[in-house]
Length: 324
Image (tube, rainbow, N blue to C red; front, side, top):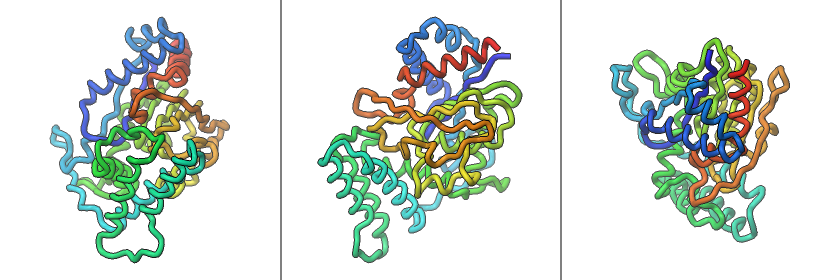
């Protein structure tokens, strides 16, 4: 039986799953070669020794489900005060994470200015003020020195739209005709790609790390390696308290958890997930590794997958599972 490798994507616009899978696989091959695993990468990733799959759920955020006569989900209502507050919490968590270890005084000052715009003191909350603060604060992030174009967004409005997907997933609402909430339908997509009997290596990115984490808690088969890239799981106000199940701990079937983050990735929440995620019964806890990508935008999954620190352990585990 071939081991399975499942990729789980994050926020963003709808994508072509087959194309995305090839881009992730190609990036992983680049990282594997850089890690000294050229031959093994060719055997495992190009030679068919591994069953590679891409768990796609992005279409579920659209007003209608993907083609195929699936149940139609209702269009999400415009963001109200509660939703704007949740998004502000998410942005504040991002700012606070970077304020813990800013690059320099100039970046720290800019982050403090951004924080004040997101949560100004002494200002009454009038109609629309929360939404305005979120947009103004989001715009301010684009001027923070030392942070690259952290999510690939061209505007604060685009960033708000994508980050609202995190909020919508964690809201556990938007039920379809069958009574299934949006988060349950998303997890079902990921669960369908996992091997119910054999080993599955799971690589998740951004919001996908939250989705995969919750999905694996209901997965009974062995996961020899769980890799999280640019994960917001450690965001202490907006994400971590809303993750299920509580208390937050490593899924029982996970044999090893590698969490990879980039200092310039603003979406990453918590560089040391082991501080807020307890080990499972086998004493497996997330181990965090920092990487430094080149270029303006460091958040995309392909930037992480091309890193030897990501691809090397992945190839080694896939090779070991294949031999077994």
